[in-house]
Image 1 (tube, rainbow, N blue to C red):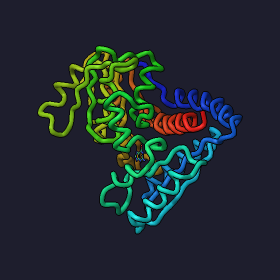
Image 2 (image 1 turned 90 degrees about the vertical axis):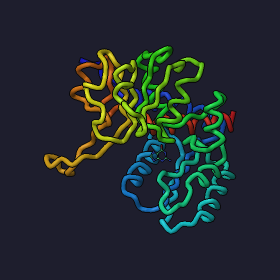
Image 3 (image 1 turned 120 degrees about the vertical axis):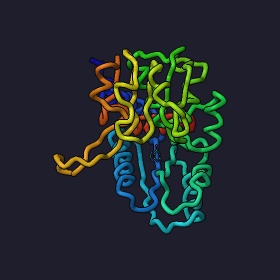
Image 4 (image 1 turned 30 degrees about the vertical axis):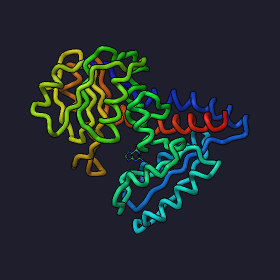
Length: 292
Ligand code: GUN
C-alpha cells in the first residue's frame, strides 16, 4: 500500500513558515500585497478567487480582488493592469484564467510587470524558466516539486512521465524538471493527446505526474510497482449519493494505483492546497525583492 503525500499538511506547514516572513517585511515597513483580477461570473473561478483572498488574509498578506463584468474590453483590462503595475502596495498580480470574452489572454498576461507576475504566465518569465534563470515559478508546477522535496523524493536521474502538455502545468513542469539543479535533473517524457501509446511510457515511469484533465485516466494497469504518483487533476464527476450531486476525482484511478505505488497524492488534499500556497510564496518573494 502506498504512502500518502499529504499536501494539506505541507501547505499548512508552509503557510505557518510564511507568517514569520510577513512579520519581517512588516518590520521593514511593507505589507506584502496581492491583487487578483476576475473577469466575468464563472462560478469555479469565483470560488478560486475567494480562496486566494482568504489565504492572504490568514497569512497576513494584503489582498484586493477586482471583479469586472464579462463585457470588459482588452483596453479597459490593460488600463487596470497598468495601474496595478505602478501601485507600490501590490507585489503580485494575478488575472484569473480563463479570462472571459478575451481574444488572446497572452496580451493580458504579458502586460503584467514580470516582477509582479506571480503566476509566471508572462513570456519573459516563461523564457527565464526555460533558460534556468528564473526566481518566480508557476504555482502548480512549483507545488508539485515542493511536495517531492518535502517527501525526500529526488527526481535526479529518474524517468518522470508528465501526462498533459498545458501551458499552466505540463509544459512548465517539464522545463523545470530537466534543469540542472537540486530537486530536478530528471529524465522527462511528456505524454499528450498526440502520443501513440501513452501507457507504454507511464509503465516505465519512476514518477508519474498526471495533469491531463481526464477523470481517472491512469489506472493500476498503466503503472509499475513502486512508482511515485502525483495527481494534479481535479475533475467533477456526477455522484447521486452526494448532496452536491458530484464528487471530485483526479486524473488517477486511486484505488487501483495505490496498491502499486510507493507514494501517491490524494484528490482532494494533494496538489490542490499547494497551488495557492505557492502563490503566497511567489508574492512574498516578489515583496522581499522589492523591499530588500
Ligand atoms: N486558473 C486555473 N489555474 C490558474 C492559475 O494557476 N492561475 C490563474 N491565474 N488562473 C488559473
